[in-house]
Length: 211
Image (cartoon, rainbow, N blue to C red; front, side, top):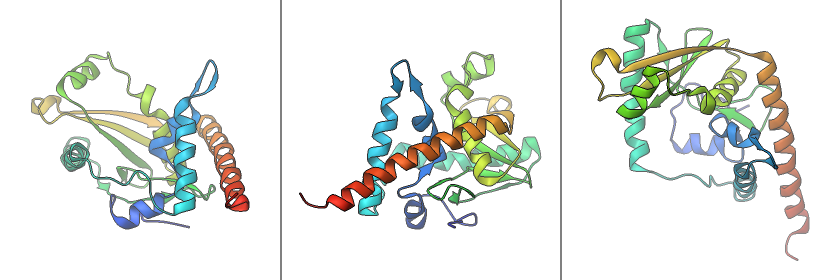
């Protein structure tokens, strides 16, 4: 089992650990449906994983300046969280799901013995809407948070929004999410089904070889 719980993210080892595996940040792509069935992102993600399994190379390994900047701000967010919430945060790398071999997650941090955190850095306009109650981040991030809890076996997770340009008293927003067994089981079932589809495609290509 892969466990980079003491490792760093965005390193060569981290990219390789994720290669060919479903990750928490992409769970929404796997489980989202439309009136016509699965969402288009599901098929695109399957294509990516098939390619990664065959090449053994991460297909999304790239450096984007905006993402690097946002990653740097995560350290500020953690410092603010530790100060205002009074919890200690441990940074981790990639953690394999305990029961699903080809799946895992890279939490932004684990908190104490039972919790974890997901950080999103917002611009001032988004953050203001969040503070007003006019933005519901759970519409986008609840599946990721639940899968993080499934992977780490934690019982709660804090959604943390951070905006460095806000006045000090408004920079940090937190919302605690408790583990929901029924939601996690449904997500895990869908992930297993999705991975089986990827396996079939990979095996077919390897069996057929060149035609």
